[in-house]
Image (cartoon, rainbow, N blue to C red):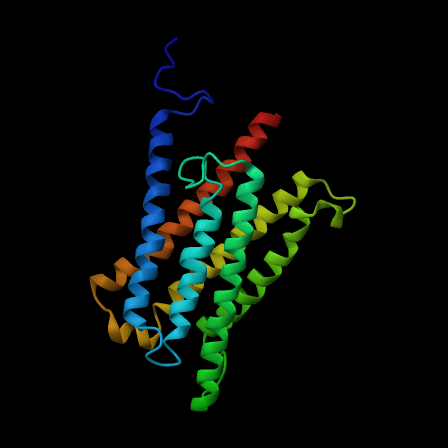
Length: 225
């Protein structure tokens, strides 16, 4: 039976293809951007070098991959059961929190050694807020694995709140990365078209993640209506 170039849920196939291409592109972006910052910062060359390295690894790589794990179009573990994906997601988020904490510790100690003010810029303030929020977000996700800890809350409601707060956390991380690209360290190293290309990386990833989360819950609404 002809489907008039539409998928089973009534969505034009071209949308499915574009979302699949966007998800695959985001995988390449989060890996490429993380490698680029690692090469630029040369972790280990100084105490400061660990800050951009760990923060990029946390929010550009681990957190992005943790969310894309549930993408219906670009998940690297598409054949895995949902429970297994949840466990891997939790591990990736744990690595994200660990790297974010190490990145925060590196810049804080570096400023202490150099006698500089802590969190004196929008990048510093938002970065601190983001690290705190991502740690709380990960702790709040524990009842999703051990549902008995959240008596009186349905699993569906917990997942909905987790997805919404997770999206806000991811956007905070993306804005923190963008502000980091405006720092004196980065602008002294990269300028011109290379800077704009670098800024596109967290921006494009954020748009793809926003689309994934919003589409997933819009689809659930359509099924329930």
